[in-house]
Image (tube, rainbow, N blue to C red):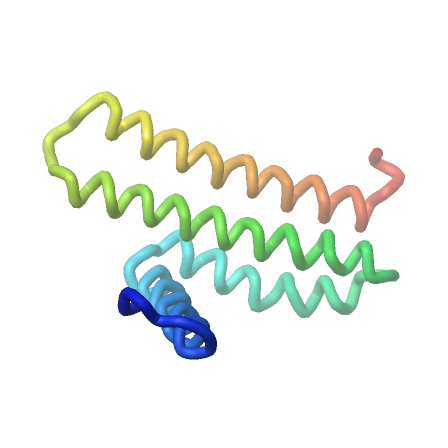
Length: 122
């Protein structure tokens, strides 16, 4: 996005940047590719299994959230790797924390899907 862009031009430019980010995540990040394949099955399944709008939002939203967190994790890793290849405690901590965020998102997906599909377990 160029500095000073306003209105619809800025929105279109931001959208193009977002699409490029999704494309790059798919191209360079194996975990994002795997989650995309999972999402291509899980999202339509969520539409099929949901009994109401709230269940649909929870089932599909948890998958979308997981993918968003994975992209943020990849972005953090890219920035840390850009800073330098040598090990630094703070770099390792940043990467580990970003990875932990992905783990929390995966746990959320599991909790949502299991609790809605098997409510007698909760």
